[in-house]
Amino acid sequence: MRATGDSAAPELRGPLVTVLVTGPSMVPTLRHGDSVLVRTGGRAVRAGDVVIAVFRSRPDLLVVKRAVRPQDGGWWVRGDNDLITDDSRAYGVADVRGRVVARYWPRPGRVRPRSI
Image (cartoon, rainbow, N blue to C red):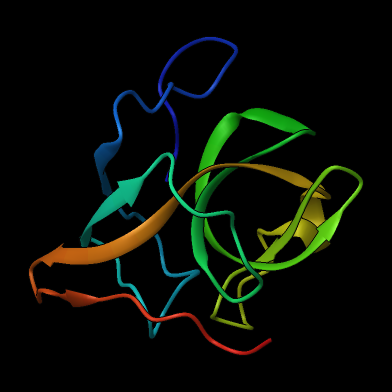
């Protein structure tokens, strides 16, 4: 998901935020056009959670990825689609902005953590 603006990704405001997924990096868990509900507070992120994050090397890029492991005060994140490498393998450590808790459109459902 690309952010709009000149130099920084948009802020996620409020305890629950809606986000539109763009691109194929999280297939099969999430698909292009899915809308998800993101919690910006709450419990700490765990490995396997689907998160909204910003890469330190690309502060203009807001992404939906899976948290793999804590690293250097942030998280190493990867997409579920191994054919797409627009994740920490390309951009390094990311700072998590929120955790995806549900997909509400077009196929409502809980987004489940996965063992990494």
